[in-house]
Length: 482
Image 1 (cartoon, rainbow, N blue to C red):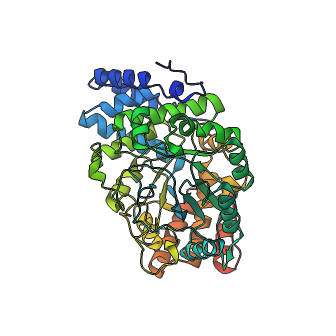
Image 2 (image 1 turned 135 degrees about the horizontal axis):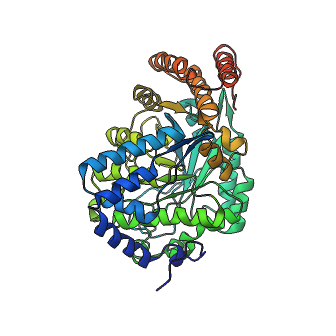
Image 3 (image 1 turned 60 degrees about the vertical axis):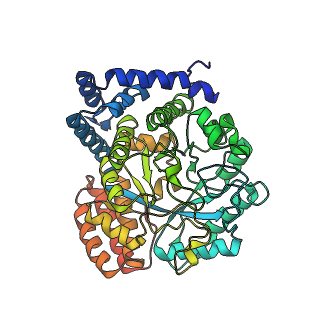
């Protein structure tokens, strides 16, 4: 049995099955230890310093104790601490993005995904570069500035050259006042050389979901295809960072295996990246198994009720305070609202999970990867976020200014959000309101901007932001950023 070593580059050593099982045993033994739980929550709270705030976070073992706790008053305190941490480092900003599906050709046999090779009744489709361009224009006309491109694993239909061509096409489309300023990439595990090519192409975050950290379960869920190789997949983030990509995004597909096992493995992976590369994941996503063509989520007996799902998100936020957290339109409005409070910092809006779906007037379902629970338009999501007290942000400034990896984390830790990300959010929201929003959304948005400007602590920054916002309103000037 592999010995646990957080600094090892071998998957079975930095994600040790023995360590996870010992962690779960420790959590069970201490789930009613209220003195310990109170101490952990106190340890996790942000501490104000001269340079901002500091959070110590929690280890995978400590956080697993919180997750196992059933005391209602302590669970409420977890939510409160998670909200406090989120407010300290991310404020009330919520970054918006949309997925763009390039191709659903895939050679893998993943039993939870409709793109699996044996599914013969799903329509297979791959976008041409002209079709990519049309999809991008449709997304720009909605108001999006940040995309996450998705493609199945198929070395013939979706080689790295195709992905690179698509990235170039996306960045090359300038339509009216629309520009995609950040392209995140969610494609299969690949080589260091290919990660170098993605870095050179100007990607934002490289995202790869583990699906499950349980090796035996992983191999069962991926019976055929290159994704069957647990070690190659699990070690992908190390190769990505070796290839120069310092913003990486982790995630598991909750519902496939025991959520407590996955929770511990996810945090161990984050700890590994921090220990080896000096910076943890830029984002952590929390998707759940959903219905799709040829896929019945009830076939998996590890489903998670909403209240536990929210608790998982809160415990992740407490454990890794500086990491962004993402929730997609897989989840309904009510669940997304609850998740916003306890740690989510990015949401998708107006999403379509089918290949070529954005250019269709009616939402197509024949090539969807999963059912979309939140089917509201981007404008409706923007309005909703403001109604809940959040600033919808289309900002991509840090990525384009080179504030990635440890440089972004340093900005976050130093408490400079209000003097950098906050004004950037307000300026990009102004762009959205002027160029794309409904009249009702504009009215709410401009009122919010006036109030939120007052929260910028530096007089010089507040003055420049206000001037830039007026320039956006009264001229065709765009893309101001700190």
